[in-house]
Length: 224
Image (cartoon, rainbow, N blue to C red; front, side, top):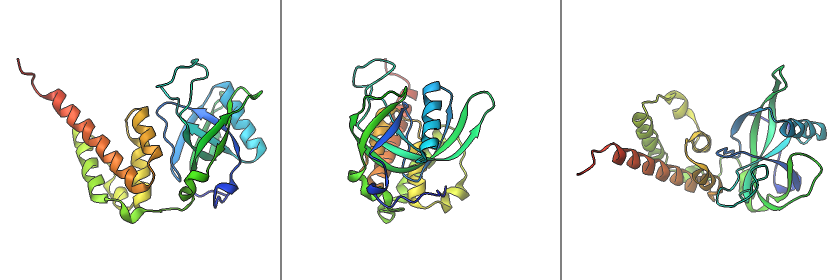
């Protein structure tokens, strides 16, 4: 998804961003995430983002390993900021938006704010490589990734657009499969925090193989 704004490095992004905590949601640089916004605090977040002109929303997962109030759960320290690149009004008070991932961030501090939605001071500096499209593609073991994908599809009786997959560059393929993967928050966070594209692909393959092995074991008759 092309964007009107160009982000060349961490300095092009604001130091304070609104954050949208959502379990199981994984946004990655240059990936697209559709969202159905209906809670009043997040409707206000979208309105403020559009009014301010930056159109940026930080996607981040609540951290289930930490205790906290249900209405303000503790967050993982790393998320990914996305720019609103599509928006439609539903007619019944909802927004349907699409975020396009820009870069990952690390939370430095959550701010005390008057808004109903949460805001954090963040740094993008540790993730400067996120601003370089297709960085590290040549190191990805594409065949291993496709082998795992075929096994997953077969085990779950699913089909795929193989023509589209064959044409997809490695970055788009790895990130799209990671974002669409059906795994839990911890696995999604591991994919997000992978230091490079090669490692992310390896993590995705490993998680898939573990999941398939678990399903195979569960399907075996139990010894008496």
